[in-house]
Image (cartoon, rainbow, N blue to C red; front, side):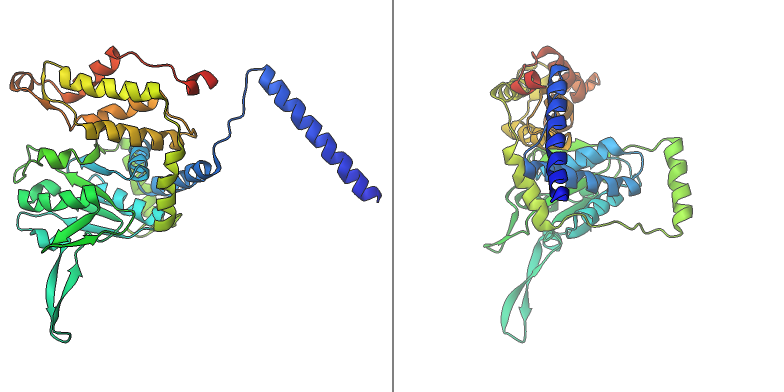
Length: 357
């Protein structure tokens, strides 16, 4: 009896001390922020995935964060880099950590559309044609050196990237869900490359660059390889295709203020009005900023979007959607410069989330 009485008293004292702590924190202007449970789970899981990825792809946390944001938003990401900068390793590591099916296609000048989408073959036993699925039928596709393939093969990816389906000989085949494409391309100046069509570029949510590692990181990579005693990396599967789908759907609970929407619209329209720009961002660019900003908010432990989220994502989201006029292009003007100037010019809104923070 005394034991139960003591337990009850301790509980009352604990509740009282907790209430006092909360009162004191509020008086000091400090508030404890609690996310919606499903968003908190998404936040925790994606950080576990990033922890696994960072053990393999060292010294590239900002790029890993952006890649994770793209996957959470259900978008396709284009990497433009020289060969050998761990883009394939990054893609494979994310697939392993997310517990999803990964396929890699090396794009070459002789690659045919059927090589990636699949083909109907004659089944002698059943006396009928059967569909043999191509490597597109996976959760995460790495399209390696996509700009080495001819335009006809590049175009075969368009429907898959946007509609998550392929149509072959009049039959439509749905791709597994979730489905995300990570593509790599060599710089356009490289020999034997075909520029990606504007329609296909527009279907990539972001364009990123991994870049070379610094000396300390490159040294750490070699030391870790020596300690590991093998080329292969051990990566723990944190989620599954079903769980990743739930994580993607949870982003619908992220709040995005009307002022943020107006901010996105203004930035997009400024890209079309700039006198140096021949073609500004399409509405798909606005959609991408909307989706990516919600994913970035969850990654940063919030269930609401801030203007800083839009600022951080704008260059990666819009630089490949803008076509410059010939004169500024000849002068060496970069689309990144134009986007940065637009971000400086557009008034930053004050949102409810900022006021509460």
